[in-house]
Length: 213
Image (cartoon, rainbow, N blue to C red):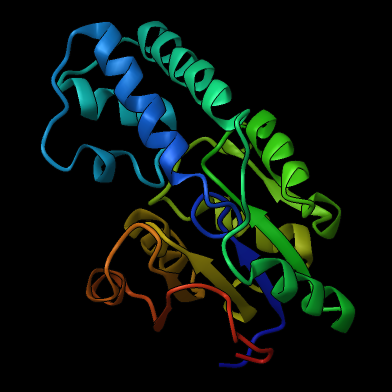
């Protein structure tokens, strides 16, 4: 793969926060008295919380209600996250190698900017990214390519020269629709699912990953 810059999703790629998200969604559904649907976690992966909550409760919500429930989920998440966050194995060393080589780097996430700042600082990675694009920066969430196109613009690179690391199917689709090459990270989905969604290859973690990949 030839690439001029790298764009990372955050949850499940830079930060191993999946367990905290699952716990937060379960806590919210318990409050609402809603039984989790089958594959509940997969319904939310890579999507803004306002979209994820509608899929979990199984009905269309008004904008205000969706925002209120999303904020409640974020409250639960913050509580769980306070117990400690870890980076995805090997990613710290990989990002540091990119920085040392001067490879442009960005983060493109469906998470809020508040969560982005909190989590990346918690795992010691925030200072490595001058360009970050969060939920508040886009009009349409993944699988729309907007978040990745904005990240490429921030880096000053053509979309086709960017390599993306993604763990969600909607995220892989978003990056592919942006014209980018995607490496899947199998922290949330199986290798076959990520390849079917459009990933060029799949890694289990960043242990042993080199640049160029």
